[in-house]
Length: 246
Image (cartoon, rainbow, N blue to C red; front, side):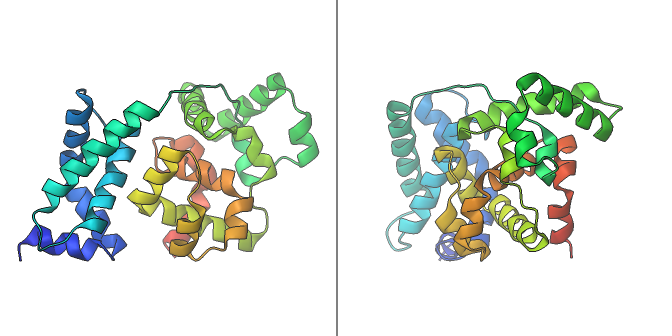
């Protein structure tokens, strides 16, 4: 049995083995997606998530006695990407955000009563205090998160109402976020469907569905920030990484 076949069979039931398989074949998966779309695809494109899920599907359906994994995966990736292109529409909307919501610093009355102009002032003040040597970078991060969160149908400002406050709940949410980030498949599912994969995330993290549902927006936003290039906003999520090292 060749090495790729062994890894593919192991990856059917072992999440870590699958992640390693994806890391080794990342460029090949992107190339398959690019060939299907006839344009250059990067891991920032939706088609990457589609291709990654298709690769996962191929691994799950792979039979080591019936041909190669790449032969199967290339067919599945092409089919899923083309299906996506035909069926998916592109929708855009603008959202407003403030970083203070991550730590539950705003009460519900305060959050619901703020108008957009006050939100912006609070956001700029908070970010300038967090990174007074780089206000331009902070504003760039806000704009970047606006572009990401709008696809999920909520704003950063909404987090004031769903951020965890109790210590135990905060730890559970942190565990869920770390599990989500560690799984390429779960992140791809979330980014493709713009929904938190609650059933799968609960099974992998051990965090109960009730907590995931109640703090869905917080977990999504935290995962996007920690998995992206948002060092200033990530400073509000430092406890998550700190817990991972304990």
